[in-house]
Length: 324
Image (cartoon, rainbow, N blue to C red; front, side):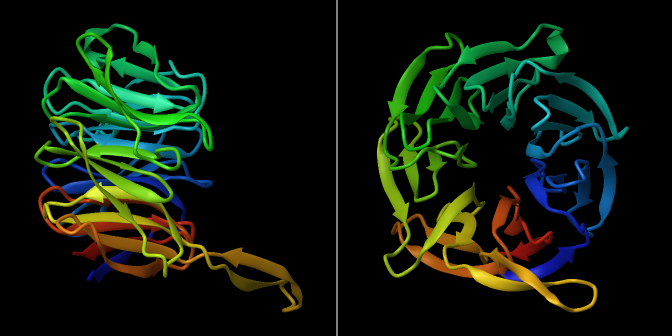
């Protein structure tokens, strides 16, 4: 079960959350109206920096190994690198032709950034080299998820065409060659990520989460909701506890909310769906718990790599910190 630590006073919808590798800070990226990035101290849960520069919603955030460098991607088609000590933009590129859905950072030096977007391209970029990003046609359709292996030799992408041709691809970074295509999903993959030890890969879609052996690429288990529950998942994370996996999304049941004008007269109805968090048991493959955490659909989440702290955000405009 989770216990709520604090609701952060953002008063905006958040599209991306990421923790630093040492767990000392996390960042949130604005989705609607406010497109800034806010950086928070994990200990105090207070805002310590605000980064402005993106013109449209933030879609993904990733910390570099030094915890003082943050990478972001946006619907404005850019990938940006930020110096947190100076709270300023230090590099960016616009190699993508459409929305950049996901960014990932290599844990070693020199800094390697992988990004994927709506144009179906995977871009690999070393900002310190001065060279332009290397662009690879990865999927027909979207590249929804990108992950770099802790070993530094592998990049994994998930995507394709919704209700069409979709897959998870494992690519060798030295040759850019696809060495494995993983086909365990019934819907297009929205996210891919390695476990903290690098021995597992997870890929998540609306309807299921696939857990893969990151050595043999064998499918180990598929996490599916019980028939008695109806929800979709959109956000995913391993946790420091190798037995627990976290996902989040929304309940399929809609709740009607009255809309009234300034005089109190009823002018219509809005629909909203509860934002849910799920806790999965990686030993049994079963759902441990699913519960409402937000008044409307959950949009993103992140778990600290060093402790059981979860941060979630939803369409309801709330960002919440939880203890696992």
